[in-house]
Amino acid sequence: VLAVIPTIRQSDSERYKGKTAFLVSGIGHAASFKNMVEQLGLKILDEVAYPDHHLYTNDEVARIRRRAAELNADVVITTEKDAGKLRPWLTPHDTGWCAIRLGIDWTSGEAALRQMIMKRLSRQHEERSA
Image (cartoon, rainbow, N blue to C red; front, side):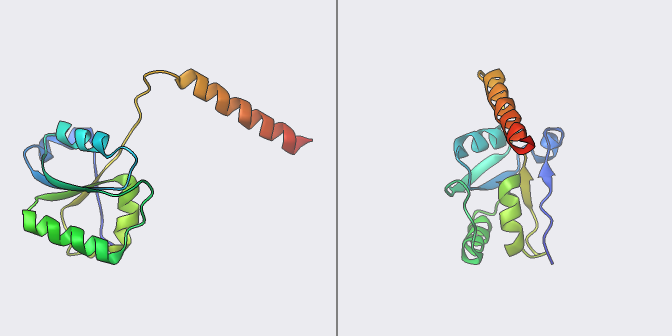
């Protein structure tokens, strides 16, 4: 039976404010993930940051589970991307695991990136049509 890892939305922030958290991530910028969790008002007790695109093992999840219990963390917080990779190793007894959806805020270059993508897609379409 797969465990359910609910996604925390910004609107849920009051529900999680003041809770203690153990963070788990396998993303390129773990610091931005940590910052987002802090902005939700959670108190971070510890974190483990694996390399980007990390594939979790049963042993790693067991270590995460033990560390969260040692810390007496209210929740284990991960990213939505990592939740999909962690879910197969979780059991129905693993309550308190939550995921956060990460987003992108463009500061510059969005138009140039969109133009580059559209140009590439147009070229691919032309190549297929020929």
